[in-house]
Amino acid sequence: MSKKMGDIESFEKSWQGRTEAYYNHWTRGAPKNQVQFAFRNHWIVIKELMNNKNFNNGKRYLEVGCGRGSISSYFSDAGYECSLLDISEEAINIAKEIFRRNELKAKFKIGDAINMPFNDNSFDIIVSIGLLEHFGDIKPLIKEQIRVLDKGGIFLGYVVPKYRDNVQNDYNWINDILKGYVSESKKIIQPQKEELYRTDYDSKKYIKIMKKNGLHDIHASGIYPLPMISHSIKFPFTLMPEKSEKVLLKYFRKCLEEQKKQSDINPWLCEEGYGQAFLIWGFKK
Ligand SMILES: C[S@@+](CC[C@H](N)C(=O)[O-])C[C@H]1O[C@@H](n2cnc3c(N)ncnc32)[C@H](O)[C@@H]1O
Image 1 (cartoon, helix red, strand yellow):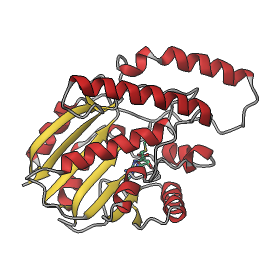
Image 2 (image 1 turned 90 degrees about the vertical axis):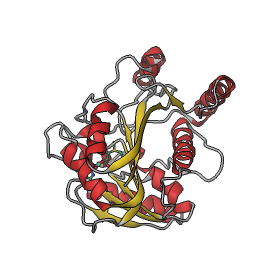
Image 3 (image 1 turned 90 degrees about the horizontal axis):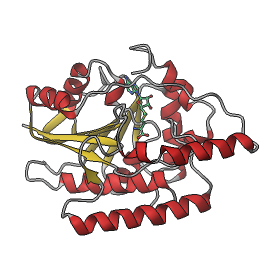
């Protein structure tokens, strides 16, 4: 998880006292910034993946390492029975507050992803976004998620490795310019962002474990083929002013439209190693 294995201190610090922690990455209407846009596209992709003959079509949903529960907001709004788990009490309090403000329903649990307070076969959908890469030993973590997943359930992990040559690399010069501007202007003083422990495993390592532990119809794909543009892209991400986000979204929409003309695959998916992350998914036998 964090820099020192088995230590959640870095995550707790990341959530504490930051305005970014309360950003709402879910919206029912049109996305207003790049992170809302990203989560809207994650949701569209996940819905497409759930449209599979091996899925039991159940509604019992769990997000592991939920943070503020952005993807879960989509599930809750769509009527799924949502449970959200995080080891950080701070994160759970933030998620509860965001759900309360948006009048979304869910059950919240503080708990460890390695040893979850749920019975076997309790869920039909298990999702994690940005969790798996923070563990050096992913075997027990994946095993535990498959334990609480019911037959015909879908396991889905969104993994953000330490990419060096992905799409972000081509745009980091813009972020360097923004950093320069921000350091010249008046800044709101916020605590220094923590460096989080992160692995660099590719999907093959995950797929092997998923196969061994009772999943089938297993797949992987790159996802999020666009850059993150901000003076601070470290977790938790800092947004630019509203007007700048609007300009960026116009460009992003155009990029996806162009991509759509070239392929039948959802343009939010891409080659593994190119996008900001990769997705792994499979169904319980
Ligand atoms: C990078 S954040 C992602 C948050 C959220 N999924 C999102 O999409 O914004 C990773 C989250 O995993 C949580 N986490 C880290 N180790 C954990 C563990 N052992 N069990 C449960 N949650 C954990 C952290 O507290 C943090 O909220």
